Image (cartoon, rainbow, N blue to C red; front, side, top):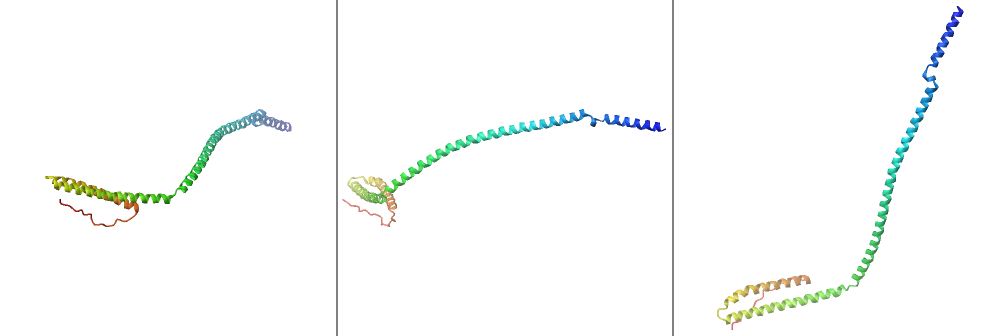
Length: 192
């Protein structure tokens, strides 16, 4: 019986060895396939990473080139702007020196003289209009049936006097004087 037990034990051991040798985990080809697949996965991951990095670097390079052209353009505009500011400063200084050389007191005196001349002319125009009107009234009285002239020209003379009064008001405004109330001008009618 001992022999039989020994044979069974030997037989069990042979079956266990066969069971171990048929397992895929014990096979060197299996481990080689695992190593190759892991190696290709790592290589493909690295390759994809390199492709993505190079694509990103290409975009960054385009952006850098675009920014360089913008900086060059801004630099040229800045040079033009600084040149324009220097010219403007020089012209402003020239204009300031020209304005400072003006004699504003003399110009003010000239304005006063001009206003006096205009006032004298306005007063002389009033006198001339009065003389002409009085002459037409006298003439209308001398010529028979000429009373119509007097009525026709009276309105026109009145309008001329009003326009001359407006000129006087404008002169007074330029002088800065207030208008003084004067009695209305009265004219003497002469009968011949």
